[in-house]
Picture 1 (cartoon, helix red, strand yellow):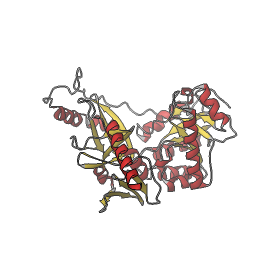
Picture 2 (cartoon, helix red, strand yellow):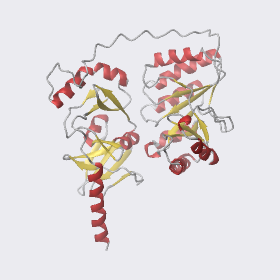
Picture 3 (cartoon, helix red, strand yellow):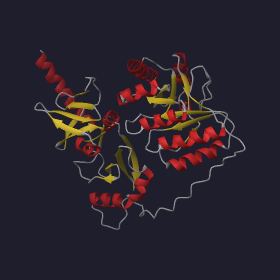
Length: 397
């Protein structure tokens, strides 16, 4: 009976793969970049999307310090920074060094093993982004030491276009995309604005908030900067807790910062699904820190949720927050992010909910901003459950 069940499950897995592993249109190209290096483009290295998740060959992570080995029974183990993920493509499971299992397995394709980008990056303290260039997509995986995405696209524009042309068989000098022209030389970046040290007005207070998955390569430096400044902040953690680095989460809470949860929902997201995701994230948070949270933000804004969705969240005890100002630390240098944010501070006397991230520039941005706020007497605070929430839906419940 058990043998027959295994055969049925194997057949179902094959059917599922046949449904999700559909070939992309011939014109669709996705390149892979690691830090500031563009990888060779071929059918066997190009990323793919399965079941809504991005996958790459496991070897892509090797240059980022992730080691890999295969056992005799076909289990691929990837390790870095004291973390391990073990994938069995035959059995369709994945677990970490604590025997915690995850829902995104690896797959054998094109003669190699493809692993889920989001899970691997979250587990090994890496970051990833998808960039548009010449009508195609570049999947970029970084360890926090690389230049910004905008600088990367600018500096690698010629190499990216050449790789796309070569793959598509387009002669050199001909535009990569239909109707597109060769990208002109990028204009010189405007000078960083001066910071007014005696502004006419200033925010009543600033809530420092950090959005996204904490990274072992950058978040400890951010926490050091906050500690040095004597400030506490609010960390909006993705409701998908599989990406959380355990030790960093524990440190966030241990140093007095407020944990919060970040949804990625829209008006079509089922209420039961949102509540289940938040409940599962709180279970993980309680397991790691002994605390749970009722502070929630939606990545695209709480005004993108319907009244019924907001009613259900509030009824479940959650309070809805949105940022009112993005510092730009994820796309600009620390100096520019600081200067532009300080300019925005000088244009208001309202309360500001400042959105920061976990980029390589964030720690220095925090140092500069908290120093400025100290000089101007602007209070830096963390979100409290007792405070009326600030959100784009003007829902103060």
